[in-house]
Length: 238
Picture 1 (spheres, rainbow, N blue to C red):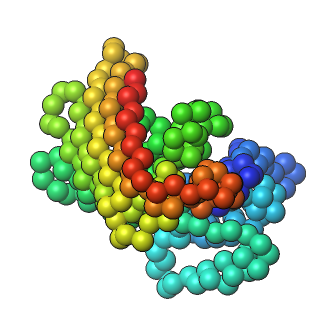
Picture 2 (cartoon, helix red, strand yellow):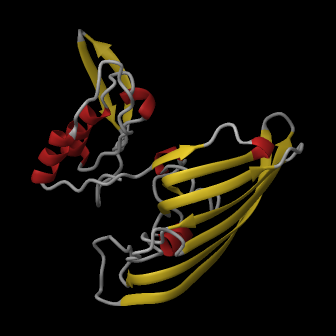
Picture 3 (cartoon, rainbow, N blue to C red):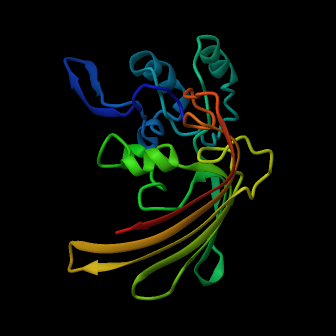
């Protein structure tokens, strides 16, 4: 997740005027549908950081003409003082029987209603206060998820995750994964042809290790205190 204190970066509508390509930078995230048209998302990072002081782009995809080295871009940005982090990089299974699915890698947890979605897909700019206080805006980590979508007329999704526990509300865990465990359930259906309903219940069980007392485990806010112990959370959403 690129950035720091700045906004995330998104590209607005573009229009041609007298042969000049114009655009409006809305907030710091270059959507994958847009960067895929030039087949080189890394080219967007420099201009977005220069304009918005933060950038979020998708990872590079495959290329029929060979690999595309990007390390010199990243080294250059780091030399200029930028902080670079991979926000999400995961695989999903597509053909497991019985409605089961597996996700592995780095991803946003499925707990709650909003946590699984990127912030640029939210209908508002800031995270809800509860997410800020208990999840540090949004909880993502390295690990594996098992989910099951029931073959019923209602939307009924059950899942659980084993995660490393190395991000807030975790701490500085040295475990491969397992210091963070989650369970979640969502149930929903249609209300007429244009509305729907959904309820959910989630649990997060965290064995925090050396968590910074001032906020994020890897953030800039740190008052010098540390916490090690159980940090559990139950979420009900409607």
